[in-house]
Length: 110
Image (cartoon, rainbow, N blue to C red; front, side, top):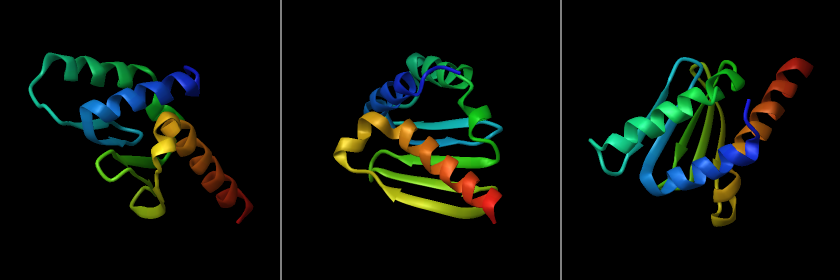
């Protein structure tokens, strides 16, 4: 797995190109601002090849770049909603991973 810092930068750059990103263990869906561009396919392939789907386990992540909101679900159950500030844009993936790790820890302790 590539370092979180590199994925953070990738998501920061993606925030200029996309409105939403949805990631679960099966697939990655990106809603781009400009549809039907060849670069969109390349970006999607790059994100899928990074292996970030495997890291999140049975959780799903939805990033809304328009409203700067991070949602985390476990299967169909809502688990966490976080409003991201302007200073959080450069560490979105790290924040998501810390939140998922916290949720997994709570799950084990319960």
